[in-house]
Image (cartoon, rainbow, N blue to C red; front, side, top):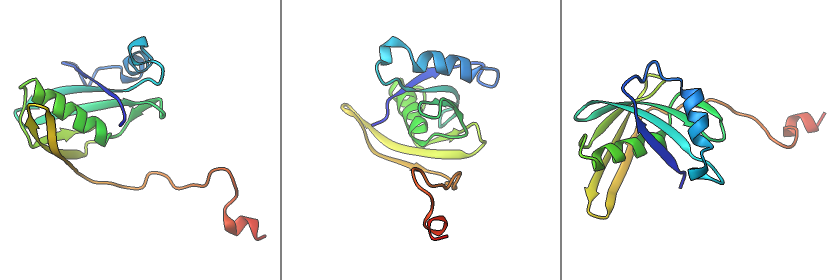
Length: 133
């Protein structure tokens, strides 16, 4: 899977996600490949807000499904909230994370929310239509 670091923030809207995310993403603890960095604020017994610095993108992303799941699971494991969890992402979209906690971890983890294309392209060669000219 994709590694995630999850930190709680009391000042999520003012947090410099680029600065702190980049510093933690490359921290020696996560070497050599780094990690995604998620900053959360718990807003209710079944709700949290989330901002994510995503490795590979090397910036804050509008939403992160695996980050939403990681944050919800960590907060639940710490006894801070209960499933199902409504995760409000930086985009304003709300993702629902549901799961069952067990002594060995989490089971039956599901993620629901909107999904949209954000990019379509071709890498490494010209599209077929361009090659035929």
